[in-house]
Image (cartoon, rainbow, N blue to C red; front, side):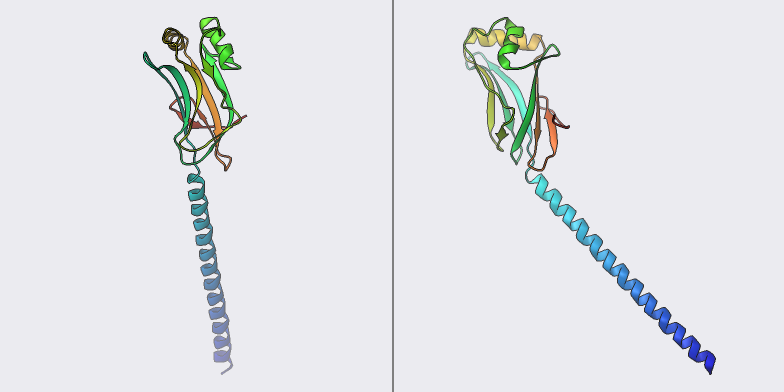
Length: 175
């Protein structure tokens, strides 16, 4: 009779351990699901504020030449830095680039800066505008010949960073 009592006591302890382990497993599964859902919600929140910058040179004989940076994303872009490139050389601003491009800044044109600005979704900033037909054609020609480039490094409001090199955007770190 003593043996059957000992066996029953062991079974109760084993059943209690099993029930406890199942409860721990259920709790761990529940916590894992909550963590996964929180990650999904965070990703959705970040994507809902995702900027997407593009720039392009637009030239036609009637309207002249312009370069605009546009935010085609759904969130604001925090523009951290830019680089103006011509034949692989970096220029400080558009006017210094014009000296390297056509030898002068003494022609009718408008320039702007985009660095350290916030560009809202769906908006554009004009970087350059040349309305004089002769100068617009000349500047466009030399920009094509000398490989004009422009890099814009920007961040989302969550600190994710990208660099735009025209119509291409890739992840990067802004300086």
